[in-house]
Image (tube, rainbow, N blue to C red; front, side, top):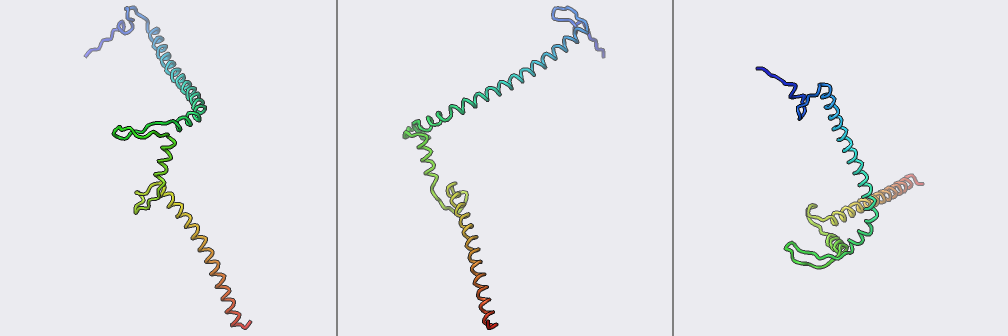
Amino acid sequence: MKIEIDLGEVLADEYGNMENLAETIKRQIVDNLTNILKSRVAVEVDKKTSEMINAELQKVVAAQMPTLFNELIDREYTTYDSNGRKGVSTTLRNAIIDTLTKQMIYKNTNYNSDKNYFTLSVDEIVKSRCNEFKLKFNKEVDDIFVKEALDYAVAKLKTRLNV
């Protein structure tokens, strides 16, 4: 097996002009460094541009959001059912109120997975309040019991000691 490399084909440009090895190495180094620098500059420009756009976008959104939100929440729209039939006209505010009103129904079921968030929240609040009451009640009962037991013991001791 014999491999022959013709440097004339490797070192010649598209017109057949020969360049020496130093010029070839220099050209390749310059091309490589140029490509690396171009990609780094492009990445840096993209990064800075994205930062500037995000900063400006946040300013614009912060300035426009209150008026836009008020406009959107009070704008009237028409609902459609899953079959495409036209429903009633409403606003986002009314839709939110209706949804919350429908969800704020206490449904006590046998399984926690069947309970809605309102029921779970009410149950949790009632449980915590009952636990607080239980602790206070037990403490007061214990205090009264201990006081009465000590009073009774003192009275019995006085009668036995004839004091």
